[in-house]
Image (tube, rainbow, N blue to C red; front, side):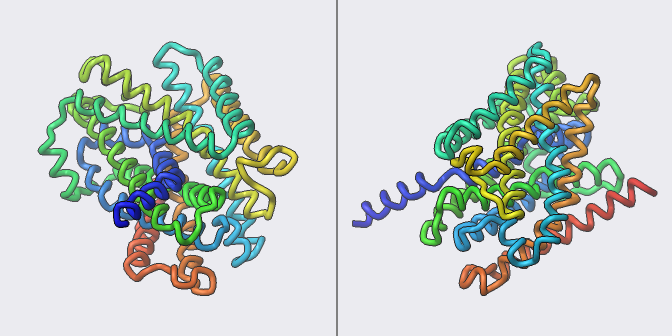
Length: 410
């Protein structure tokens, strides 16, 4: 009987896995890979210590989103509108929409930069990529969409051999991962905000909760969703660690400064070998196209939920016109921005991550107020430990944002 129970639990987990793993891995999108590459190339191993507390914070924040979705059966934007009114929801949606427009353009910037390494013009690669990811969502089903992106998650593992080929100092990696280091310079603070902003993003919370709701995960299946979240969060930050290590072991050691992930891929070739460079570039292409689909999807989800419109991948243009047109608009606008001649691809990717860091505290405050409402969450409200970690993450993000503004203007 015990063996039967274990098999049953395992099968339940396999049926639930998806939203947490996919959402966490989107962390390592084009802007994220660019940010981690810059962190490694400019500051060596000195930012690795941030990954452990960020993984803990990411698990806590993502777990709250999944829990709210499973318990309430509603998306985050839906809950904000119902509990705090349409006016507050509207303005939150406006600012997040602007941020995500930059994020979507950043994904296409990463796609253009990565395919450019392989000699493909952005005027060919970007339209093909845009049409491909549009068709996956608009013409597919949620089940097909999830299967494709679960496979794509595995491709992120190419960064591990890429880092190993760079022959890093593993002792220095271990020490810097557990021993904090901080530099009081504007460049370090801005990079730190970017690293945190790309690890825990505002739109992720909306997408994860919406995905849990659309998949129909119930309260009694929540344990499996929680495990899905934990595995995804650990995987994404392990990949981030290897990206930083690859650049620190080669570019930082050689004193080479870069502007983004494509620069890192090119610069790795003479120092870590051609195959390390190819793997790095392939990982960037995969991440860009993957996130280029998920990010506008998340935006369409939360805006439609916030405004009370129909939303869902399983719905048609006729059933959910606002949802489908928003998704289409974001993909088209993101692609068009990158197709503008001499568009500043790297600054677009970099700035989008900093904006994520600025907007995150506002989203976290709403999440914390909602998840601690007993009338909404019943016995599933936050524990004291979860509240401490989540509030600490919020306060730290506000402090880092203020520090960034101080270094920017003074």
